[in-house]
Structures are given as C-alpha cells and as structure tokens.
Length: 123
Image (cartoon, rainbow, N blue to C red; front, side):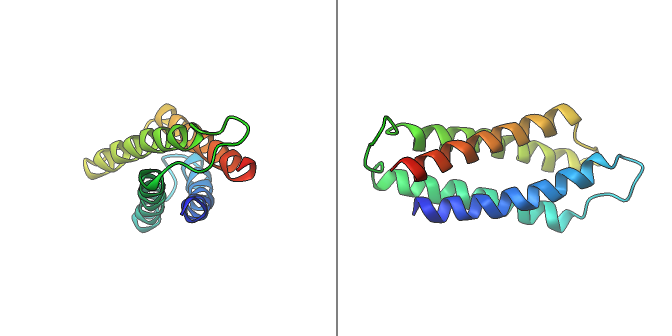
C-alpha cells in the first residue's frame, strides 16, 4: 500500500510541477485551470489517505533506522495538504496564493516525496 501511496504522490508531483510553472508565469497571464489544481489536490489527498491507511495496518519492517519514515512522510504530506486547502479557500475568495506559501507547499511535498522514496528504497 505504501507503493500505491508513492505512485499517487508521483502523479501529484508531476502535476504540481506543471502547476508551479504555470504559477511562476505571473498574475497577469491566463489563470491556472481550476480542474488541474483540483485534480492535483485529489491525487495528493489520495496519497495521504493511502499512506495513513498503510501505516494504520502497521509500519513497514524496520531496516536501517526507517521505522519512523512513514509517520514523517505522512506529517509532511498533511502539512502540504493543509496549505493546499488554504490555496483553495483563497481561490474561492478570488485571491491568488502568495509565492511564499506556494514555495512552502512545494517544499513540504518534495520533502515528503524524498522521505517516502527513502522508505521504499531502504525497506
């Protein structure tokens, strides 16, 4: 199940990269399509839910000190998801997300990606 969570996170990361490039084009350009952003959020939320379900069934076998990597990745993904919900709330109010929050969201998601990848590789 952790592999499925990682696969969903990979898909969300690819779409997030595209959204990041579109965001960096600036506010004066055509706005980012909401369907892409919602699909990115759905993939990220699915990855988090799958990871939480996998961790609920029991942590993966511990090798090389990886026993807490799953919980760390889940916490980082949850924080990134919370920031994504802030983006949704702001978008519904007609505001563009701040660049700092977008960078923080991306950083948290990339950190979760790296920790989850390490968990898969080292177990």
